[in-house]
Amino acid sequence: MKSKYAPLVRLKKENLEEARRMLLASNQHIQTIQELIKQIQHDLYACEKPLTGNLQDYNRYTLMTATYRRERDKSKNDLAIAFHKHNEIQDLLNKALIEFEKFQYLQAQEEKEYMKKIKQQEAQYLDEIAVIGYNRQKANK
Image (cartoon, rainbow, N blue to C red):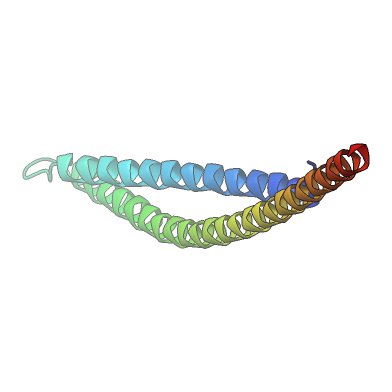
C-alpha cells in the first residue's frame, strides 16, 4: 500500500539526516577551534622572556606574545560563535526529529486503518461465501 504520507516521511527523514550531518560538522569545527586554542596557548607559554640581551629581542618577545594573545582571544570568540551555532543546529535537529516522528506516526496510523479496512472486507467476503454455501446446501435438500 502506498501511503499519502510516504513522500513526506522520506522528505522529513532527509531533513533529519541533513541536520545530523550539520551537527557532526559543527562538532568537528568546535574540536578544531579547541585544538587551535590549545596550540596557541602552548606556543604562548613556550615563549621565553629574554632576561638579557638587546631591546630588539624584548620587542620581538612582546610582539609575539601580543600576537598569540590576540589569536587566542579571536579563537575563543570564534569558539563562542561555534557553540551558539551548534545550539541552533541542535534545536534544528530536535525539530526535524519531531517532524519525522509525527509523519511516521501518521503513516503508521494510516496503514493500521487500511489493514483494518482490509480485514473487514475479508470478513464480509467470508460471510458472503458462508451464506452462499448455506443457501446452496439448503437448496439441495
